[in-house]
Length: 202
Image (cartoon, rainbow, N blue to C red):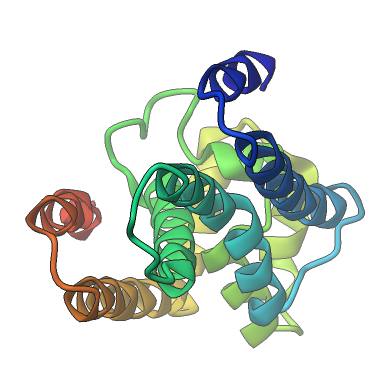
C-alpha cells in the first residue's frame, strides 16, 4: 500500500491522495466484513456479500477509474460498471477456487475451504439448506484434507450451488457488456470480458 501511495504522490495531482485514501478505506471496509464473517462463523446473506464485493473488489476498479479521470476530460459515471465488475470478478474467483480441476491433487485445491471463507457458492448452500449443517461444519474445520474438500464440493453440486453461481456469472457477464455498450463501447474491455469467460470450462 505504501509503494502504491508513493506512486500516487508522484502523480502530483492535488486530489490524487484523497481519491486513493477514500477507495482504500472502502476496500478495507469490504475486507473487514469478510474477515468478521470468517472469524465469527457468521454466514452472510447474499445481499451483504454483494455489498462486501462492491466495497472490496469494486473499490479497486473505482480507484483506477477515479485516478485516470483526474487526468481526463471524461466525466462519465463508471460507478455501475465498477460495481458489476467487482461482483463478477469476486464471484468468478469464488467459483473457480472450488471448481478448478487443475489443483485437485494440490494443497491449493479449494483453498477457500481451508481458510474458512464464506464464498458465494458456500453462502448459497448454507442459506438454501439451513437444516443441513454439513457444509457449515466442514467450513469450520478449515480442513486441508483433500477428500473432505471433495465431499464438500459434491454437496455444493448436489445443492445446486454451482448451477446458481454459473447463472449469476452469465447474468453479470451480460450486464457488464451492456454497460460497456451504453458507455460508448470499448473493444479492449470487451476482450477482457471474453478472456475471463474461461470459468465456463472449469
